Length: 214
Image: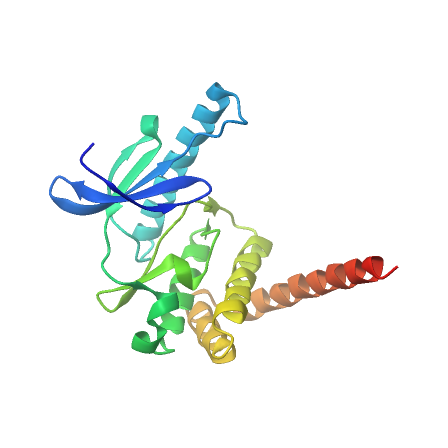
């Protein structure tokens, strides 16, 4: 392995910057968990490394912008992918403008049509590169055809807008859903599910508050 620079330490993995065969690259290395039996831990990390790489490739072939995978080493729990120059969408809104959210919705719809759930859909996991949005960090991704899972993903994105982009959340989410519906045709169905999820969340919060006030 060439000389690498640690750029991010996450709960599940370490992210390094370096070179791979002369190409600027990101190395994502899953970290062992001491609370698991070593054999089980190795099995889980190998399977998750392979699954993440396969889902990224599936997203790419579905027309979603993701970093190109350069090499996968399941034995070392490592995925090597191209390094993308650019800011996260979270930090690039002033450059991209709000119309970028329609593209985000469109690509999310493409993933869902192909039964791909990203798992952590926030503007911090998207890079603005070459005037396009690229989705990154598929560490929590999975396959699902369940409408509830897709609506939960959309709800997560809405919550992230409310938290991080509260000043533009309404217009941004409207554009997101325009793009999503354009490719899936199921925007209304998803939004009904999103409202159900939000109502369940409000009910739980209210119940907790009542319990806390007793």
